[in-house]
Amino acid sequence: MIGFHLTPEQEELRRLARRFAQQEIAPVAAAYDRSGDYPWEIIKKGHEIGLLNESIPTEYGGGGMGVLEACLIAEELSAACAGMATNFMANTLATNPIVLAGTPEQKAHFLLPFTASPQMAAFCLTEPSGGSDVAAMLSTVRRDGDTYVLNGTKTFISNGSVASLYTVFATLDPKLKHRGICAFALPATTPGVRAGRKLEKMGQRCADTAEVVFEEVRLPRFSLLGAEGEGFKIAMQTLDRTRPLIAAQAVGLARAAMEAAIEYAKHRVQFGVPIARHQAIQFMLADMATDIEAARLLAWQSAWLADQGRRQTRESAIAKLFATDMCMRVTTDAVQIFGGYGYMTEFPVEKYMRDAKLLQIYEGTNQIQRLVIARHTLGE
Ligand code: COS
Image (cartoon, rainbow, N blue to C red):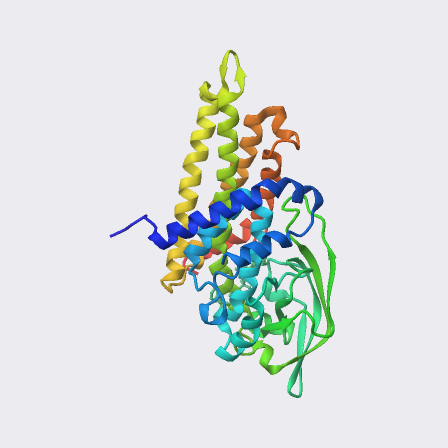
């Protein structure tokens, strides 16, 4: 039996997230977009009501929620501001390797103090030389007695300059390819760790994106997540669980763009009638509504599979690909429906379009998603 209804708890969570997003985030989204400031006030409130760290088990101070619940939150936050949502979601991305691969002692050590107050974590995978070919990373780690020594530069790191906790990937030897990669958890205060300048972006401007540099960073063995050489799989398993959230984010952002377009089309008069009466506009709105529904179902399906403990690499890639390409189309069409006004910064839709572009790029470009889907489709 297939059911598409949410449980009363999930409905309540959705209402909570929607209320928070519409009351606290939406009114300040444009101002944060202009200033590019990091929205600590919003993060603090989100932490207070349990919308941060939702995926961390309750015994470590988190919300103990599944991927589906995380999708519900992501959709609602993104409908108010995709950049703010990215800050929340990057925190989930970064803490997932600890949740997935940490021992109970590591989880208690890294997560308990972290969840006790509003703090952020960052997932340090991408490097200046590349983000798609993870196995080719250049950051290195070497054993030195009872310690590891980490060196390398990571870039485009969400929450990079504001995080107090990092999960970092580095290789024992680049020649080992994916089998040499190790995953570590470490506090940002570890000597040798330096967050670089915040990078200026086209959209999602209040989302922190920065370079993080590791210079002779000495770590105890306790920092290693999983076994040596398991880092690649930990990163992939993490992304399998977070790509549905990006799909849900795309649904929320597209929904906001469609709602703005509907409102505008009902009031903008051309040729003597509101433009919503013209079939050209109606068909655009119909396509938006259809695509949004389809994308949400894909996001929920991949999230549901993850919550069943099933491997859903293919499904999460499909959801991420379809939903984020959909979001780019919908936000672009929303600007089109607004016409000249849509291109002006005093209306919200140009921000939606700028914010949408990043969704096709981060957490694996959509070309990488196609590659993953093709390999699974070909049975490789
Ligand atoms: N779950 C578990 N294991 C996985 C996996 C997954 N999702 N994906 C791959 N693996 C395993 C494979 O089974 C293989 O295992 P064996 O060593 O036992 O053979 C190993 O990992 C290597 O896999 P593969 O050969 O597919 O690796 P590739 O180097 O070809 O890379 C892609 C695979 C391209 C899919 C990967 O590098 C990727 O996802 N890149 C994008 C990364 C990304 O999203 N970056 C954004 C940064 S985060 S904002």
